[in-house]
Image 1 (cartoon, rainbow, N blue to C red):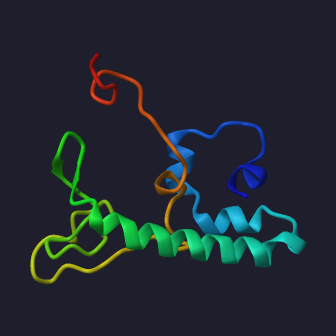
Image 2 (image 1 turned 90 degrees about the vertical axis):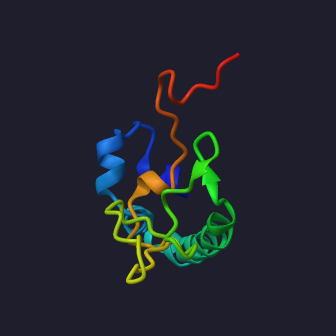
Length: 113
């Protein structure tokens, strides 16, 4: 559904950071939106269930998208640190760069050997 809404042209990382999951729904034909909204909800539920189980990412470093007590924080503001941390899980208003597969080129992202 995401790819059908976006079309065949690739989008930049900046565009993926600005556009949201809900923007994708708006780009679909009206007759597909109800099923797409349910698919998005299922995706968000699965993402929000699995991500807290991934306590370590990036060469076994602590997952930067989890609060200190293990809740999801996709805000990118580090607001999820400390006792007053707010949860910011995957929703329709989450930027696409958390939804689309992405692989930044270069030695930091490429596994050696």
